[in-house]
Length: 371
View: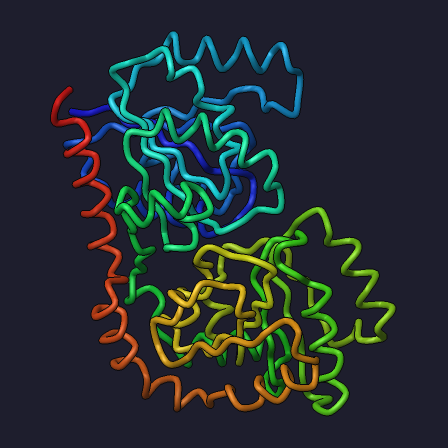
């Protein structure tokens, strides 16, 4: 049995965390014994999986905390714990600070797995990436753009990076009109047009633009509601901005949720005007529920698994974004009719979750074949 350490789970709810926990749920436990290294308390959404599927959960001092304690913790951790594989999942090279001691542990194989195409800290990322990529025995990414960001265009062109698509459990995400009706009734939204966002309240996700677009949409469609799922450092700022726009009664902040899949059934459109993304997992999940998605064209084209995705330039004015939203909306019956077509599209494009897990397991097997 091979011992695996996974790094990359934070306190938030995001695509990286979803990818990791889906792997933990399905990886062959007779072949791989998995530990997780954390520098933040994990979100309760993932508690059940982590507590039931992980052999050991370890915590180290974050680099943003007590610097001396961080150095002692991270060094002691790798002295005391030996692994065949360390699988690092991240949107930037900043997580290098949690596995650099592996420079001195020659038998451990390092997999660096990129889940983003930028994170707003290019200078720090570029410095750390030089060291990280020397240490990496295997380079993996969720998309071509995420690969280029983490490892550079030359390595991608030379086929040094393996792309593993973020597959989903289609049965779990299949559109269900009963859930849609139940939630809409419970939250008094039965007659509303619902624009949704599922994203951390951080600069990358461009919440101010979401508010601007919805403000114009609501001016013409008074029966519309904006639902924002997520937490983050900018939440208070965005709440204040909503107040300034005078649309507080039509905007609902739900915070982090354990039932995001159900809300995707409730929404009429998922709005993602991100400043940059690798391959946003929420856009994949949305398509699996037959939900139309409107993104900025700063998001990788690889997100277009189905015909449900449209993209626009952030330079386009809000009026054009509003018109596009109107053109995307589908009725519940239309979404139900798309279910079989969606399943075919996902299978054809390689977004089957079982295939994703088998690809990860094959990497684990191949990389340790010489150990």
